[in-house]
Image (cartoon, rainbow, N blue to C red; front, top):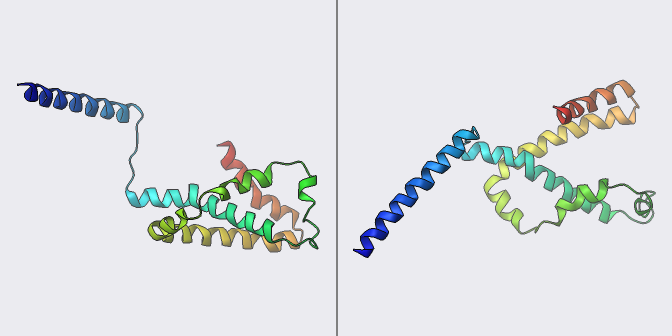
Length: 145
C-alpha cells in the first residue's frame, strides 16, 4: 500500500513539474534550437572569444623586452588587456573536448574573423581614415541595438 502511494505521489509530482516547466517555456517564449544550431551559436558567442583570449595572452607572454610595447602595458591604466585575456584562464584541457565535438564550427568562426582582421591591416597601414570608420561602425550599431 505504501509503495502504491509513493508511486502515485511520484507520478503526480512529475506531472506538476512537467506542467510548470511547459508553462515557463511558454511564458518566456523560449525558442528551442537544434543541437547543431546550439553548437554554431556557442562557437561564435563563447569559443571564439576564448580562443582570441588565449591568442592575445600568448602574444603578450611571448613579447620580448626589446619590443616597444613590452613592459609599458603595466604603466598604462586600462582594463582592456585584463578583461580580454581573463577567458584564457579557463582550463586548457577542456579544449580537447570542445574541438573534438565542435571543431568545425570553431574553425569557421576563426576563418571569418581572419577575413575581418585581414581587411583591417591595409586600411590601418595606409591610414585610410574613412575606411577605418566604416569598418568600426557596424560593431557600434550592434552594441546599441
